[in-house]
Amino acid sequence: MKLPLLQARGISVRFGDHEVVKDVDFNLSLGDRLALVGESGSGKSVLAQSLVKLIEGARISGRALFTAQDQGSVEASAIEAPETLDLVKLTPQQLIPIRGRDIAFVFQEPMTALNPLFTVGDQICEVLQLKQGMTRAEAWYQTVRLLEDTGIPHPAERALAYPHQLSGGQRQRVVIAMALACKPRLLIADEPTTALDASLRGQILQLIRDLQTRYGMAVLLITHDLGAVSRFAERVMVMEKGRIVEEGDTETVLRQPRHPYTHRLVHSQPVRDLMPASAQARLRVQAASVTVSYPVKRPGVRGWFKPGQFQAVKSATFHLRAGQTLAVVGESGSGKSTLAMAALGLLPFEGQMLINGQAWARDPKKDLPQRRHIQVVFQDPFASLSPRMTVRELLDEGMALHLGMLDEIERVRRMLLTLSEVGLTENEFPGLLERYPHQFSGGQRQRLSIARALVLEPQILVLDEPTSALDVSTQDQVLKLLQQFQRTRGLSYLLITHDVAVVRAMAHQVMVLYQGEVVESGETAAVLDQPQHPHTRALVEASKIIEKIV
Image 1 (spheres, rainbow, N blue to C red):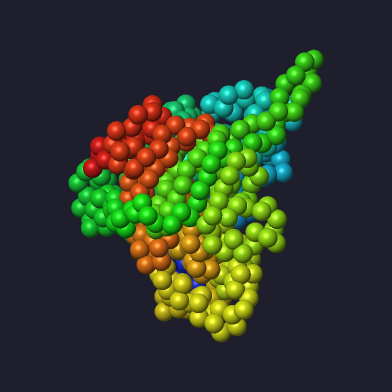
Image 2: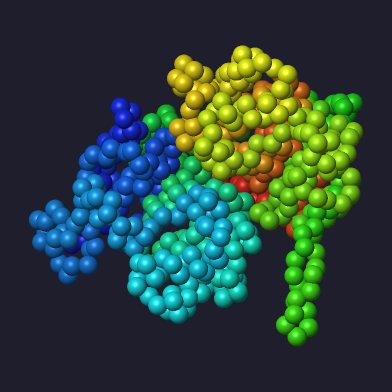
């Protein structure tokens, strides 16, 4: 008889008087693929991280029985294997040998998980030397093999690269390689595909599945992506406000949800509710033959390197009118975010970029008045908000720069009004202005990011993957919020995304980037319903996974 690898019984997690995980039970055996889904702030990540006490200030109760399952036989009447450990009772010091070796994590944002000051090879080597006691030579050999196993081309060369020198998909593969370095028995993948485009999401999920078969481990997938759940998991648990409200085999739960909350998650799709586009509206952004290049070293003769140029964006031309949305879509590494940074005047470029008819002077003082009119909301609210600044400081930073003529009372009034417009109020969050970003969920943090941009009353918002880190329900709320602001304020949106459903809901026009080039553009319905370029067709097809299920 084999007992479950992990038996969670009555797991609850409190922060002070606030209970965020409530009486959760589940089993995981070797070879299982279990998904945990729910809205931002529902307690998914808190539950997983509390199992090995990675969260400071959390009070954990219940039992989390973890066993090696390597005994030859167990009596049929046995409840626990002899070497079973209750993770809840272990101290952080006692958990150190288990973390990384027996239970490993793949976190959501690889740029945060990886140290930018060390090569990726050195970071994997460190794990092997600390946890496995390998020599440097043994660890390096194993590192190259791990990178090869995770599908990274030229692994010996890539091991010498720094995180910023790899694409988003490659960085996530490195994080997976690091997690698998000690051949864990349980891999907890916390939103491992959130920041990736549809085709890369499929590749990463297939990679984890293949590696699970090879290593024989159990996988707990934490995600808000129901397409990922349907592709990967055999069983699924649905969490609402810290409680498991539904669980079962994946196909049954997704096709025949019983709980209203699950039904809402499964059938939550962005709704198109836009202002009609006007050909006479004022031009807000005009780009002509915009090219962005980076200096690189290219191989020359006799092993020497010569200076070269890598063109991340190649001669892009587009325009954006008042009250309209232009979506820029493409796979990871296609140049979308680079183009957005050029529009913001944050990167040097060739060609012409006019904001309200005025070119960037590329002089900080001269460009300052222009910057108030074009603001940005970034993809990752965890990284874009300083953890050391309160809500008041985050919103006041831009106001002090652009609206210094307002007195403090007026600035606070404007802050509270803007925060209430994005759904953050003093009633719900007492002491709102003195709170820090970590005291909000991911969806709430993104609302805070939007408020920080809107408090300056801009005319243009650059939205760089604004909903990719959010669950479908929260994503729908944020998109409705953006649609409302576009109607009431006449905002123009330059929307950077790889999510075709978001494009359909938000965009009047769409432009498809592939390897830095604009390969297709036009009205949203025309481009997405009758795509002409093979890359556009691939993006549209990859987006239909969840539609086929539900």
